[in-house]
Structure formats: structure tokens, C-alpha cells
Length: 140
Image 1 (cartoon, one colour):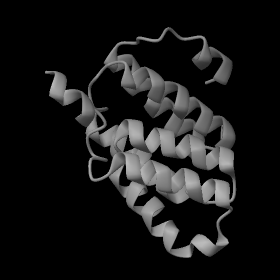
Image 2 (tube, rainbow, N blue to C red; image 1 turned 180 degrees about the horizontal axis):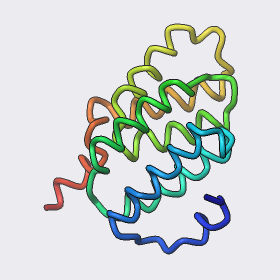
Image 3 (cartoon, one colour; image 1 turned 90 degrees about the vertical axis):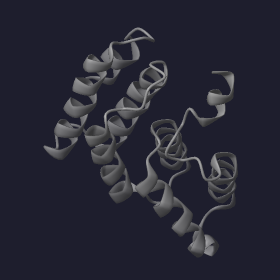
């Protein structure tokens, strides 16, 4: 799975194809066939396309991504934090979101720009992390 191929995909992809692509990315990362940076970029691109389906990603895949990103979470890199926050919010990843909130307990060790990004995201999401389409439901 190559990031250039992923970036050139159409904005809308059938749900089944997306599930397969997410699973493929997870498998390749687990088998050390892609590095963390590439994995995060691929997940970010796939997440952008998942959002366009206006449905939650299948729960087993979502939970797998949630657990994987929870293990990768750190506050050392602004770029990583930014990508992971976007994926977490757009896929509704509760485990990682809770880990992100817990990381604020050690805020003295976090760069101010990273801290601001985390706090802003938490404020925006509020208690609705499990449903990324919460704000759209009023338009039903």
C-alpha cells in the first residue's frame, strides 16, 4: 500500500472497499511493511474518505484502529498529534480519545502548540466522541 496510490483515490469509495483498505493498512503496519509515519498518513487519507460515507466505520475495524493508535499516542511530535487527533475525531475512537485526555495530566511536559491543539480538539468534541456525525443529526 503506497501513500501516493491512496492520495490519488477518489473522494468517495464504497464502504466495503474502505474496510478492506483499512484492514490492509493495519496488517501492513503490524507486519512492519510500512513505517509509522506512512501508516498515519494512509489512515488519515482513508479516514477522509470514510467521512464521506456518513456512516461509522465497522466496529471491529474501528476498535482495531483505536487500540493501535492508543499504543502510538505520544505528545512529542506536533505532526503526529495533529494527524492522530483528526483520525480519532473523525472515526469516533473512544479509547484513544480517553488516552489523549489523560495525557493532559502531564501537560508540563507538552510543547505549548501541541497542548493547545489537544485542548482545542477536546473542547470541540465534548462528550460526543463516539459519534462523529453528532453535529449533523440536527439536519435529519
